[in-house]
Image (cartoon, rainbow, N blue to C red):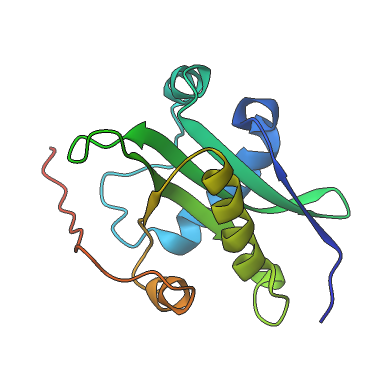
Length: 153
């Protein structure tokens, strides 16, 4: 199915209302360990990281409607001096724009191009386990395992 999608770098703070609509769906669908977690973005922290150039947000739109995003945190590696890295914090495409459209694959590839232009040499992609096979298909390889446990009250 051919869909006319546009991909663009956007400032998350300029599209808060649109993002929050998708964040709710993303959280409901993707977060499996919801104990103690309520979807509640820290926009102050996002603004701070954005102000120092650490947030990279690529969106995908169909007919100007936001249908997906990939957000990376960009930083200098603590382990490898001189290496700029990114860590994918969020990756989401609305379910109705996934299978057969190529949108998710194109979103990841275009974000790689953008990050490359920023001088990023290594990207870490933290994704939910059910998304891992898709990301591996795009050339990413498992290097660590991230586990979670709620230890609060």
